[in-house]
Image 1: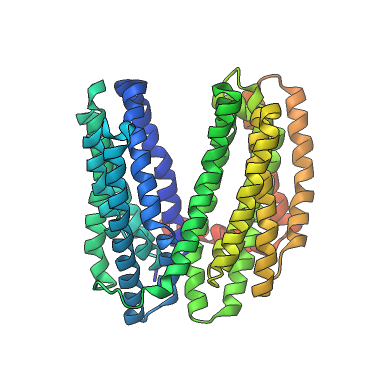
Image 2: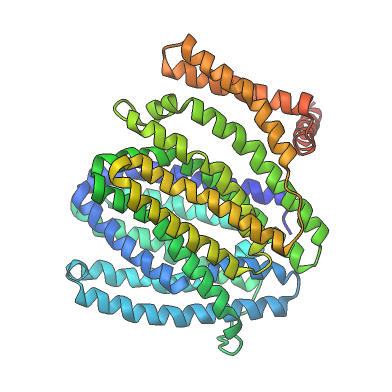
Length: 485
């Protein structure tokens, strides 16, 4: 089985490619297709993706948690795989009937029937995509190499075949084709781990986990999109522009936490499946240490240098995005905690009901903030409606996690990180006063802060997780140097 460190490297490469490849095609596509045709293709894609959301529900979430708990028991693994794929086939059949009726009956969809009918291929092939199997088997090298290869072919195809504004259908077909090719390759690769048989008997045990996690995903999707829709309806497109600018950078930071979490979840489920609870708790503690070590200085620097960050990412005229950015950036810390408590602890223990309760409460709380404060405070209220419920979510998840398993929360570590960050605040404020140029303040402030933080954490604080990891990196570099000599 691949090591945790190698999986983390592969998943980080996959995450970076997820941002790099769209940067290559997005400017080209928007210019060639134009706003209207680009909107037609993306609207159709969003409808197809919503159909997939309802046909999949929480199946992938359950799959990549149950599979690692099977460990080396191939028969048990095949039972999980067969039941989940069978359930996926049945749910997809139901959704396809509803989807087809919508295409015929809703005028906005029926005007572009060829797109939506081709979109059914994505819904169908999503059944055999089974990415969750390879995540559960911790085969991140295969996932990354396959994805990068197909994304490369996709980018080349976009530049070759999408040449004029009328080619929005070709753009749509090529985007769908990515999923089809991925699915075919994946299904062939499943033979390495399982043999599929349509197996209805026994599916009942998976219904509650799949539907509860599905509702959780739907609520979370609503949570992410409703604030933008409501903000646009109440305050207009300008407020949406400020809010979207404020959230753009934080989502990139968050994606790296997601990459880390995506590697740890199957590993922890594997430990729990083998009943290695002591090692399970040690890895949970390590996860808490990582989140604190990375997110606390990151949030500190971003809050102080928010005007400079917004200026370099969005340019002039986006000053109203500074306060929303300062609010949402705290989510990097609280979502990091919530992911450990939810994905690594509660879902490993199969506490699906507790997770659903937390998501439901926080979604309602977010909607309440929007309804009461958006008209008066605009994009700031929308930022609060995203950030504040995550604080509540982390508290609720902590409560449920503590009820189900004993673990140590590293309060002292977090306090030490906060104390170490105090000089960073003073340094950044001094640089802002010393230099009137935003770029100098940002580059110098970030560079000195990173060097200072690592030096103090390693030589002064000597926190165990930090010293162990840095010593490991230094030893590896030393070995490479001697090999070259």
